[in-house]
Amino acid sequence: MAVELRSVPDCPNLAPARHELRAALADVGLPITVVTEVVGDYLSPSILVNGVDVMGATGDGSAACRLDIPTGERIRAALRQAIGAGPATTAREQSRVDCCQQPGNAIRTDRPHRAEQLPDSLQQVHRAILHHFAATGAAPTDADIRAAASEADLDTAKALRELAREDLVALDSGGRLVAAYPFSPTPTPHRVSFGDVEVYAMCAIGALGMPFMLGTDATITSADPHTGQPVRVTITNGAATFQPAEAVIVYAATGDAGRSVDTCCSTINFFTSASGAQAWIDAHPSLAATVLDQDQAVTLGRDIFEPLLAPHTALDHRLV
Image 1 (cartoon, rainbow, N blue to C red):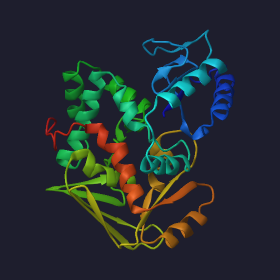
Image 2: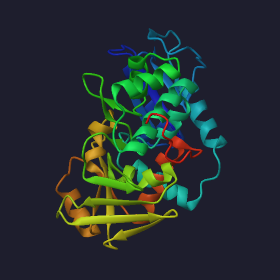
Image 3: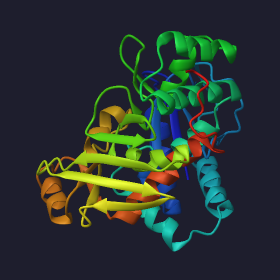
Image 4: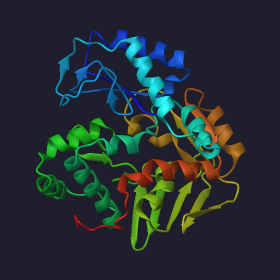
């Protein structure tokens, strides 16, 4: 389930809406970690459950103070409907949900839903950016992105801002890409190789999800941040082999609302052993963290990133 609390900067009604939302979550038995808070040009404050405004608004997203502030009754009704309408959760899915909730809401496990809710034109630009990374191992240039935006009949800067608002990409102060999850335009500890292409991933989970997103075999090379020892993962036909065999992943975040690049990308890493991972967690008590086994981590990476380019158009070269 994806719950989003949207507001404009300094919205005077944000705190009451947040209070009503947290009370409703407690009443229906959901943790606050299912909520993502975002600030931007929205009807404010708004609460969306699985992409649907609880008060029924269907506006174009222009910044405005709303008169029909979300009520506790409407929030509870939307949450209960979402719980009741959802498919039965398998043991494997529940394991994934549980491990996602522990680190906090900064980790964007709702990224596929965010991408799916974009207008088709924005989805086209987003996919073009991802395809360019996959085809070249590097970020698209400004000219590349302008061409993709023009093809989609969009303003380049506005398109990037919209993608950044949904935390599908991240931009620096000059509007340049610093992330297009799972890809990094600059070196990180996590290198992913497939065919003749080598690219960097923003985090360990992104590295594991990348081969599934692209529909390709891949080799991941990284290093344990606690010991510096290498970790290597080979993914062939969807099956992952870890070296060393005892390797695990720490899934950690600050627990704050914000961009993934700021709150969790640098703290989701491979470790050579569970004991080393726990030692690292103990040394960073300010983080909300958990240790994932290999199956949990691979499943999580696949579930977050595979849908972003589904159905596969393997290593599309449209921007090359």
